[in-house]
Image: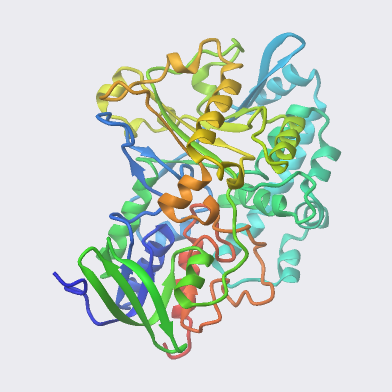
Length: 523
């Protein structure tokens, strides 16, 4: 069967890539009456926001790559009529630590009284809790001002600064390394580390990095939804992309998988998109092309100069357990500790040491990571038998492991890093995690790990970078265009995570690319 069979020769918009941002753009444009074609290389839509069954013969549908939701505006869910829900987590985080010869930790959540008592138990006083309250009250005010702007035309820096209307907050978040604020406001090493982690998720940087890459990462982690809360997608992350695909199709968009785009030719007014399938090659014409892929991929498709290579720096681990492990800190219920974000080896000094070791070309001695249990908040991802038997999922995200560390032997380094990371977790458990792991139909432990090189291979994330490139400030800069999705080709837009205000599961670049198309005069 020819590759082009069933497709029209031309569309108002052709979208390259069926990840969540591409599906958002497709749904908006199709609902506006445009003819839309989505070409997806893989055998399924969803990109990194998918749910899969990674363990043979086990009825556990895990969010294999992206796993929590914060930056998705309710506006997009409402506009597109998505059948999609999230659930809040009662506990924000738990961070275990060994102090004065005893196992203790910091539990944040479960109500103000419990959080206050947890701070006092760890630090022996009120100072750190009061500092915590003041600091996050400040970020909350900033979140309420900035988050609504993500789906508006890009403000200038001065316009955003006026909107924030808080010179102290602007200085802390936009002008000086976040490490300055952390060290000025907090005294306890563990508390400092918990605050800093939001600046490092998917970003390889030190607290005092002069580039402020860590500040941009921190900003996006605390503004989501105007609250900074990170919620659990009911049914797993694939529930979102399934709902988006349904919305796009119902609006009239055509979604095809197994179609790899290999070139885009454009004169700025009309474009031709070349693709190949297992059965042959084809070309389709378009008035607009929206690229839901990395800036590197965009450059390769258009023949432009590629941007600076990106690099990821994380380890992603999916696990299924027969039961949650017991903790050495007997004052905390594992069901609470793992329902929030469980921080491992993320004290402030530990994070600095891990970064320095990785920057010097070696795996950290104590790899920092964080874990959460999806199934405690949303058991629907597990089959009924697994739920009744008490099975639980664990998702681990490791920090400070740049892609360059895996170049010599990805498989060997992956194994070494996984063992070292789990050893850091075991140090705080009353029983080895290995004793709690479920086994698949072939008797193998239900655990899989993905390095940056694995993500680059599987999903074409450049260098395994989950944001496609360094996150941007959410305001206009030179060459960013009105919506932050524009390219040097007038009718080719970047609607992936590498767009301005991209990164994370947000749908924002997809929304903004669609708005850019619909805003064109006379279009």
